[in-house]
Length: 169
Length: 459
Image 1 (cartoon, rainbow over the protein chains, first blue to last red):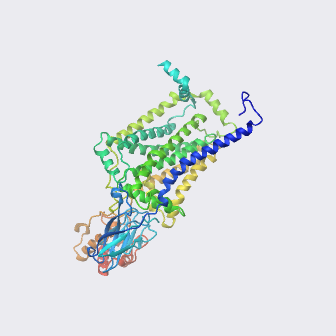
Image 2: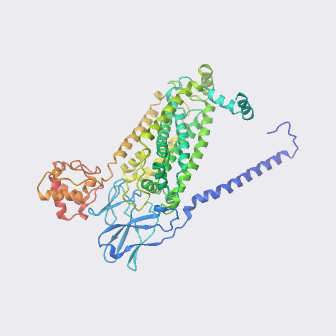
Image 3: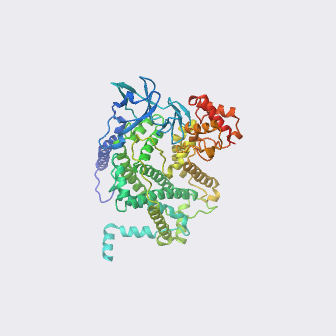
């Protein structure tokens, strides 16, 4: 660094050390000022608490006892530009006069959409061939866990399902 | 013109630098094995060009991307062609970088002093795969939506941070308005920016260390003497990169781009599936060809090892790429490195085998298997006919083929009576197996009897 054309005073090394440290600290501060908000913005979904809301999916009488059907409803807090991606579904089974069970449509293997085969009384996953019984327990294939269920209730003659995150194994 | 160039060179040094880069001496007889790196770079340039064009019409909104893709494919001038170019260009880039990595590994071009060439290339390989995955998702149809979910579910297997990574991928609790914009930003800004930086570094290193010479058996790399010997080789037999070596890059690159363009015209871009509506459950998500082999791995892995494979697989792959340049001395010729040759053959064989399996997907139920016709059943016994009907209705045929109709998940039952007695068949149907439901929960005794009667006549 020392060049003969640069006149050195006894204080020069100190001064240079100070100036280089000052510059490094300032650069770091500017980097943090730019970087932290960007990282925070990207990581925001991790901290955002999405509300749970109850969605009506049909009148009680619309569902026959012992049947399992697809019901469709909207996510809890859909963004205005979500379009059809705000929609979601569940397999709703009417157990008896008052009780309903809402199964997740996501295979517990890797999240693919399971299909209810009414004749065979089985849920089948098209991706890797997972199979579940009518009560959501695993009957064959790779799924490690039974199909999760969503909270479901009956209010004023309407069946309501509570929105939930996509179940992640 | 001459004066203008002189002026630019005086003020920037660019002309001299370019001439130096083009005319720098390279080892003789490098041959056709050395074209894959430049071809990968050219494929990336093709992706940038076609990608920019597509980005001018694509709407990166979860709700509207699908319609804009339809517009690009069906109405925009050259839109179908550009989508096709971008798809086959991506395919070419993945394939070429795979060949390039295999080539440099087989010829041990990563050895001293080119360890950082390898490492920067390894990061470029991972970034290329990241571009391929995010790019597939920008084709925002039903398959893309389910691929995001499958990707998140895989990340979710990670201990401790799995949930967080999954939420990061989905951009929230569920698929929604936030999901696609983020993938778009990663695919067109963030990852390509990293790729540009790393390509710059990779090329700087290629110029700094020179292209590796063809390996010779019995001529090991010794860091103490390698540089001196390489310089001597260049002085003795070196040829200018342009045009002595570059012409092959140009010929191969032109052939590659022409092939991509031809495929874009003849085959066209990948089909746009149903809309990205997560409530439509008639979906059959599967990845594009470059990840199809991994789809098969996940289907065929033993269940108890699966989480380990999902988590450890990519980590081991990354670690392997990292440790390669630690072996930076010694023989380069593949004749003296049989293990290296075996490893490359093994990896490519595995990919091809799993790819074929993924293409056939025998584990996926055949939802469309038609019921057996009376001729196929070949019986007038009402119970046999009833059994055949139930065999279809109750879902047996999703997984079992009979007379060529049905799934491949379970054994073909066309001649099951040759190997199982009616009692054995009854037992299997009633109790199931790890890969078959216990049908006692589904079938009445009469129904079971009818199906057993039907199957007992299959010989």
